[in-house]
Structure formats: structure tokens, C-alpha cells
Image 1 (cartoon, one colour):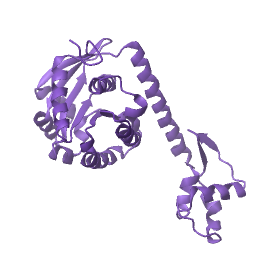
Image 2 (cartoon, one colour; image 1 turned 120 degrees about the vertical axis):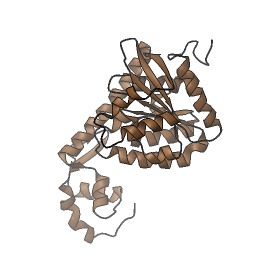
Image 3 (spheres, helix red, strand yellow; image 1 turned 60 degrees about the horizontal axis):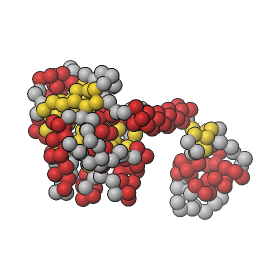
Image 4 (cartoon, one colour; image 1 turned 180 degrees about the vertical axis):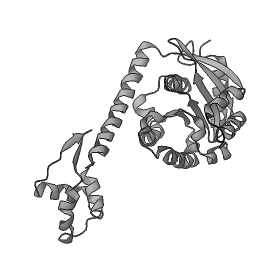
Length: 289
């Protein structure tokens, strides 16, 4: 059978059937979320990409449709609207170094689904454990499908498939105060279905690895910035009281203050530079950004 751009899907019929059910909701302008969760190395991102390819009808463009972290995801979502894409993926791996990322993500997700549902874009979230998502999302009925990945080997992975009701039952049990290991609830709650997915082709897997590695390098660079207490010219201007990047850059140059590092095409300065420029703001008119 021919499924659009591929003669054989990388996942089996039960997974396809549940995804098709989700797509019917999208056509009715109903906010809909697909969640892929599982432990490290169980193929979460692989399965998310395969589902994305299926929904798009062709290989998704990672630079446009795969956000490694919440900030990048928001940019990619706007890109999907501009480019008329059908699916956008958020991968939690881009936020693993941020302590408060989950609370920020929950706020963003509630806002995103309120605004963007009319664009009929399928959103896929990749997380280690789905139950950390906001209860408000579940109250609205936004999460419709949970694909829990496990048992992956060098050829394929196994998936437990949960619909909306069983997903909420799982979340309720996982968030009980007396539960020591929330993930054990997967063994106590029967899924709606089970399925499996194959690994990506070598070419596609290499492309994903390169993209993912690039994203992780950005994360490491961000950690260096945080640990060394570095600050951008824009951040200096903001701390000074809302001065423009142009004004701040001019003052840095006039005072012969040079960046101590260049990361990701951005110049970074020692955080003490703020104190050096602080006295200047009394002598210049405030410039709005």
C-alpha cells in the first residue's frame, strides 16, 4: 500500500490508525497534541520525526520544523505557519539544562494552543515523562495521544499507545504523593494499543544526528556563558535602564571595552562591564529600544 511519499511506513498499523484519528481533530480546528515519551535512548525523537514525516507527506525540514528547546520551538512554529507546514516538533533535549524549563514550557503551551489551533498544525512534544505537562492542558482536552517508547534495540522500538482518557488516568496515578517511581504506572495501566517502529534510514539518521549535535553544542555554549558570567551588549543596555543596542555598542567602543568571547556569532563581555558604563547614563539622553 502506498502512504503518500513512502511505500512502507517505518511504524506499524496501530500507530498509523491512532495518528489518523488525531488528524481528523485537526481538520475540525480542535487543539491537538501528540506526546512521545520514554527514557534516554528509547527512540523518542526518532519516532517523532517518523510521525512528522508521515503527517507532512514528505521528510520534514529540521531547520524549519524541529525545535530543540522551547525558545527554538516557538521560532519554528512561526516558521511552520509562514511555510505552510503541517507539523512542528518540540524536543525537550534542548531545555535539559534549564531548571525552570518545564514551568515555562507549560505556560507557553497553554498560550500556543489557544492561539495557533486555527492554523491546523500538528504539534508533537518529545519528553522523558509526559506527566510533567500542565494539568490545564489536560482539562482542555488538548493532549490526545501518548506514545510511550521502550525496549528499543538496534532495529526497532516498542510503543505503548494511550488515548486521552487512559493518558489522564496515568497522569493522575503518576502524580500521587506516595508514588516513588511514577514510570511504574505504565506496567499497571493497560494501553489502548501496542505498536512498534523501525529505526531511521542511515541517511536520515545521520541528518538527525548532525542537527541534534548542532543543537547540543549551542546548549553547551549557553552553559559556558552562564558559568563564566558573560553578558551581551543588549543585556548591558537593558541593565542600564533600557538603552538601545546601538547606544551600548557605541559606548563600549568609545571606552575601548572589548568582548572576552564570541559564541554563536554574538559578542560577550565580562558582567563587570555594566558597572564601568553605569556612570555614563547620567550624561546621555535615554534611547528607547
